[in-house]
Amino acid sequence: MSQMPKQFISVSSQEEALAQLDAHGEELQILAGGTDLMVQLQQSGQRAQRLLHIENIPGLRNITCNGVTGIGALCTHRQIAESTSLDNYRSLRQAAAQVGGWQTQMVGTIGGNVVNASPAADTLPPLLIHNARVTLVSQSGGSRAVELGRFLLGRRQTDRRHDELVSGITLARRPERGRDCYIKVGRRSATEVAIVGLAACVTPGRDGRTLEDVRLAICSVCPMPKRLYEVEHLMQGEEISEALLEEAGEIMLKHIDPIDDVRASKRYRSMVAPRVLKHAIACCIENVSGDLRPWN
Amino acid sequence: MELIFRVNGRSERLELQGHETLLDVLRNDLCLTGTKDGCREGECGACTVLVNGRAVDSCIYAAMAAYDADIETVEGLAKNAGLNSLQNAFAESGGVQCGFCTPGFLMMLTALLDKYPHPDRDLVRDALSGNICRCTGYAQIEEAVARHVEQRSGE
Image (cartoon, rainbow over all chains, first blue to last red; front, top):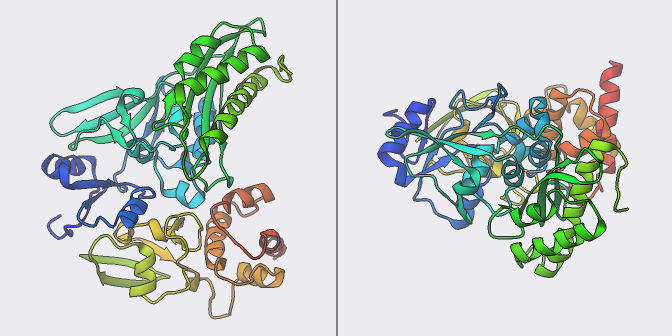
């Protein structure tokens, strides 16, 4: 370590990373794949901050599925997109496959996506509908797990303390008959930052007409990706109908208050988001029972 | 701080500040200007190089993160015998027009073909979604890949 340069510290073990964070956490920017951070650094021109390069820590790249599904913080988007062991979390695989182009997916990590807390982070809506928990470790405090919804405090703000490292994400078990998907609207297919990104997990009732369970989360339309609890409550247990979907869209808009920005106007987002919601629910339902689309 | 790595098989040792991008180091310190400087934000793919076999946008990759790594750039593709088979396929299919995006496409495809030697058209399109070309309309590039795959399986 003594020979390593000051502006860029590369660690090869978690212990080493935690020791650095414990001693200098406030001055260190954690660098994993860097696909977000390097852009920010170049655009803001901030060169003062020191980089703690964690990409080479072994053991944080695993996806484990014994009871609880765990995803190491350094798992890359491409790794997740191609991981058949995440078949129960299709929305997450779909989202990971749409984070930038392959170049970004090959180095960008899920831990980075979570900690950067971008309003447009594709992986966050799928993680939110699967009740993800973020595991943080530190030298002094051991380990703690926080619900993702509580971990995300605001635009690019999280509950991570300066001495902590996000080591992984755990996902709740998917409802047994639930089917999920992630729908993204952007100008270019892959490299574009989403205008609207929406994840849904729907469990159809055994009668084939009602919605037993609905989970929804959205990104890119409001300052923070978030669960749409109000819409979920509206739909839970109800019979699927055009009227229900219309009402769901209206309630969603009331609670997200779409933003206006360079990628799209508030008006466009207000028009497209309810359609995305409808489409996402249709995709989930179709996966379960073929052509059953009672609202068509 | 010191960066030691291998570029196209050759060992390099450089003195850096610490925040430099791999793109700037390749172009400015090593004069390997085949790797193009396009958007500088990981959108266009013109700066794609291989780091230990992974295709990365070198404009948003920290050079120091490549410590001890093997880097391949477009300059490493052509051997003594001339252009490699993929490069020839690009030339024969008209996959090169202004040429600015070509090194990035070649490197992305090199990584793809290493992992999937017989990609179908959908996979090729998906893998190239992070590379922008404003001249060819992509059709000739797809054709070049098909030609290359065909020629190689005929060998």
